[in-house]
Length: 230
Image (cartoon, rainbow, N blue to C red):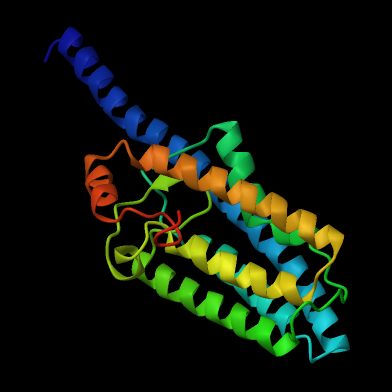
């Protein structure tokens, strides 16, 4: 083997070894960002859950406070174990809508408010909303997250009825809590939440509509959240 062949083969071997390391470093950076975001979400959830449990321990009859902590834990907790999607919407507005619509509970007034309906009725609504969320999320399996993303088209279970059944579960739970813990601060928080959720939903559909499979699904399941209404 002459010196030129030796140099050429050495360069070829060096390049083939460098590429995997470069890809590996990129993957490690992405993994570090993903883990950091999920740990931050878990910390915020833990702070809120602790505050909610303290309020409930002071007044154990306030089941809606405990159920709100449970519902929030389901929303954020499941997203911590969601699979990483191939395509995600990282635009600033989508991030604001998603983060605001998910972590709205940090702005809720947990102290006792005005009871527009009995606590038991509000708790029943919260339970119904949580059970529906569980059914919808079980239909999704691990195709669940905070940012709008295409994690695969799901048409089974609750998704046979409406295109965004989890949002319906959120709405029922939120009405149950707000009706038994009413106040101007909570009213403003939930009004903002509903606006954020609608914007989040529409941007999610815009992303998913790029998939021909989802466009076919839209033709079959016409309504987004409430059959016959929206």
